[in-house]
Every structure is written in structure tokens, then in C-alpha cells.
Amino acid sequence: MIVAENLVKEFRLAERKPGLAGSLATLFTRKHRIVRAVDGVSFTLPAGSKTAYIGANGAGKSTTIKMLTGIMTPTSGRCLVRGIEPYRHRKDNARGIGVVFGQRSQLWWDLSVPDSFRILHRIYEIPGPVYRRNLALYRELLDIDALGTTPVRQLSLGQRMRAEIAASLLHDPPVVFWDEPTIGLDMVLKDAVRHLVNHVHRELGTTVVLTSHDITDIAAICDSALVVDRGRVVHQGSIRDLLRTADRRSVLFDHRDTTAPERACAGIEQGLPGVSASPAEDGRIRVDYPVDRFTSRQVLAFLLERFDLVDCYAPEPDLEDVLRRIYGGGRPEPVPAEIPCGPAAGGA
Amino acid sequence: MTRALWRHVRLAFFLGGVGLHRLSAYRVDFVLGAGAFLIRVGLQTAVVGLVFRQIPVLGGWSYHEVLFLLGFSLLPRGLDHLFTDQLWELGRKLVQRGEFHRYLIRPVNPLFSLLSERFFHPDALGELAVGTFLVIWSGSSIGLDLTPLQWAVAPLLVLCGALIHTSVKLLFASLSFWTVTSLPSMYAANQVSEFAAYPLDIYHSSLRALLTWVLPFAFTSYVPCVYLLTGAAGLVVWLPVVTAGALALALAVWRRGVNAYEMTGS
Image (cartoon, rainbow over all chains, first blue to last red):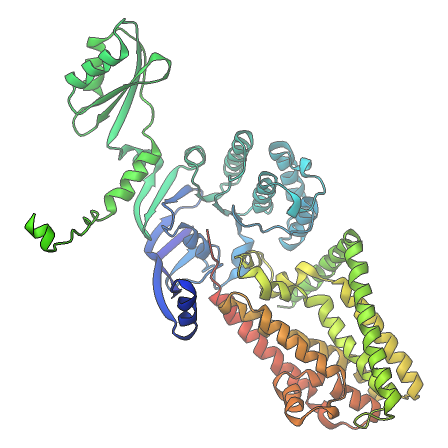
């Protein structure tokens, strides 16, 4: 459904020198620096998948999405969405995709949301029944009527995002690209958006590509993850597989003993070297253990033997931690700061 | 192909309706825009009147002929203004703020999508009304009697003139795809177009050449007016060629610009 083959995007940035003298110098001699935002990325996303496109800031996520939506042309390589190259066939591509850029609006700035929808109805040639069905859905889930006839420019960020999300789905696109779709939304609306996209996916088999800094969005919407670091794909697979790569797991437990929490923790750390234990909220104790040294069975066995457990659970590994490790692991070791080797240093 | 064209025509009518609807939402803006424009043209007419208090003929043109030219120049300008004013936004900020992308993700031609966002700019209606009034008034004062051919050609002259205005505007607005903002150059080109509201005969030959062959604004007013007033063909036969050339060049630059567009930020 969505294919990227050795996708590369480079930007030419003008080097500017600081200060007034610098800007004058820039006027006459322009030096350019080539920045590779996307560095030979290849992947295939099957139809009907819901993929989180994950990467640190500057990893090339947005740039890739801009090529997949036809906004920018790759420097080399190519991508295909529903079998067409988006930047070559923008109109055909646009018909089959829905797009949200959280930071940027694509609605009609000085029109109200209902007016914008009427225009979308026309330009996408949405059949009447589909249009009415979708409006009813947004009314129910996003409370779209509450936006009234206020021009888009006067809406709050949260209100505008609701309209943007609805607009991106109005024509039942087979593929949606959502770049930070839940910024500015409160918890209730975030839930509504997740519910909406899962509903649409269930009914129509929509392929979803999502980028978000909100891990809960990713966990609630997506079933697979594509992790990009410095322009390259470093992991592709299900979210479950991604979480399995965690190198530390945790267990939280509650017990009936009268031992002071500090002493209990110290006891655990002594009995299981390499494990860290700390008091958690509600008098529980949290045990973090490295998976390469202990199995969960070993940890639990130890705890069962030592404590009178009344409650115990193992949360999913923290996606943020997993990602932090993936980004960190791929990077070269930091170069130690250079120590001046002058006569003073040598003499000491 | 024809189906796509029809679709865009139907959409244009629909979006034009939306534009008219918007006028009612911005009544004050409309009144101010049209009012300011009336004052400007009033002053222009007064200046021309003052000049002709001193001299009977200017570069071979009489008072009413100059007013005819002034009025006629407003027609293509107004027609262009009516439909393509969103190009100013492109030159001013759409690339700079990374907002141009929205025209690339809609299933219509990107240029159409851009222009249709602001069909029916209110100032343009003032321009067209004043232009029509000046042309009729000065034409009847001169006792202008057009031949059937001239009557038939006149609307085409206005249309071609409008397309030349659009081409120049599109060309300079498209430069913003590389320079991020191109408002200064758009503004400069627009200032040059003001010269075309007066007889070219009063200018230095270098300016005349500029207005005829570089930024061909002479073809939007002076050249058609010479034809309508004197019946002499002259340069007017070149009008279709100049229009087609200007449009082709502007569209080529636009297309390259769209492909070079780099959306900034996340």
C-alpha cells in the first residue's frame, strides 16, 4: 500500500555567519551546507495497517510524510502510495489520502467549519450519503456542531484540531497521514479521536500512518511501529515486538509485612544484585530488573519467598525508555572533550 | 481532460459563490477597500484634469482620450484582481510560513486551489465599476464610434490584458518558492504597471521598451486603446502572442517552483 525505496531528501541550507558583519558577508559569499534529512529509507506498509512513524526530533519523520503526501519531491529514490508516486500525480494522490499536520492548518482560514466542509464535499466529490454519514459521526464523537459558525482563524487550537481531523477523514480516504494529530486536545478529546480513527479503521480498513510525541496515542491507535533515527529505519515491526526489545522490566507489588519500605528495598537489592528497588506510590515497591540477568520468574520467586504479597503487577515497558535506548544505542560514543596539553598540563 | 476542466469550472462557480458570501461577512473591509479606491481614482482624474488646464494635448492625446486610457487600464487590472489576488499571499507569506502545502493535498489543480481561496476580491469590483464608467463617459465625450470588429475584439483585449497582469504577478509570486518571500519584487512590478495607465508617448524610450517588451503592461492598456481610438492595428496584432508567451513563461516558473517547494518546520 505504501512503499518507500531508498528515499532520500536533502536540503540546501545557506550558512549564515552571526552578527552584522556576518550578515553582510553572507550577502556576497553564500556557502551552502547539504543536510540529509532522510537518508535512504526503505519500508513497506501493508494495506490496513496502523503504523506509528517514530523518531526523535529531526529524524526525518515529517519530511518523509511530506514526500508521501506529495508536498515535496525526493532528492533520490521514490515512494509509492496506492501504487502512484505522490509528488508526480498530486491530484490522483490527494483523492485517496487524508492529511493532518498538527502544526499547520489546511482549512479555509476565514470560513466557518461547516462552510469548509461544504467546499470539501464539492472538491472531493463526496457522495451525499457518505458525507452525511461522516458528519453524523463527527457530531457524535467530536461534537463538531459546537464549533458553530466561527471562522477557523478564531478557533482555539483544540477546536481547530477537531475540525482538521474530521476534514482529513471526510472523503473516506483509504490512507491517512496524521502528523501530530492530537496537539492541543484534552484527555476527553484525545480519547474521542482515538475512538474515531479505530472506528474508521474497523469499518473501512483505512491505512493509518501517524507521528506523535504522545506515547499513549501511539499505543492506543497503532499496531506497528517504524522507528527512524537520523534518517534511517532502525526498527520495523509490531509495537509488541518493539516493547520486547526493552532491556529493563519492572514489577510493582504490595505486601502485608511490617518492614520499613527502605529496609525492604535494601533487602531486594542485596538479594538480587543489579536490580533496583524503590518505594512507589500507595506503599508499593517498584522493582526494576535487567532482563539479561534475571528472568521474571526469578524475580517473582525471590519476592514471593521474601514477602507476603497481596498484589503484584508488571507494567508494559515504557515505550519512551525503549525509544531512548534505540536512539542512544545507534549513536557513536560521545567524543571526550579535548584536554589542552599545554606545558602547564604536562608539567603537573 | 474535458471532464476535469468542467469540474474546475463548476467548482469555480461554487467557490465564487463562497467568495461572494464572504463579502457579506467583511462588509466594512469591502466599504473601506472600495472607498479608498474611489478616492485614488478620483485624485488621478483630478491630476489629469489639472495637467490639461495648462496644455490642450499631451503627447498627442487629448484630455478625454487620456481619461479613456486611464479607465480602460482599470478593466484588465480589475478582472485580474478579481480572481488572482491570493497570489499576493503566496509572495508574502505562504512559503515563508510553510502554509503552501494545503494546495498540494487537494484533488484539484494547485494553482486553481490557491486562487480559489479568495475569489472576488472586493476592491476589484470598485476598479471594474470605475473603469467602465470612465470608458463610457470619456468615450461618449470623444464621440467614439467603434466598428463591429472593434466591438467584437474589445472583450478579448480586456481578457488578454488581464492574463498579462496575472502572468506577471504569478511569475514574481512564484519566485518566493526559491527566495521564501517575493513581496518586494511583486510590489515593484505592480508599481511599474501603474505607468501603463498613461500614454506611453510621454515616457523616455527606455521605459517605453520596458513596458512593451519586458514587463508587457503596455499591452494591457496603451496598445489596445490606440487600436480602439484610432483603428490603427499597430502593435495590437502582437497581443495574443505576448499574452501566450507571458502566460507560458509564468506557468513554467510556477511549475518548477511548486516542485522545488520545501515545506519548512515540522
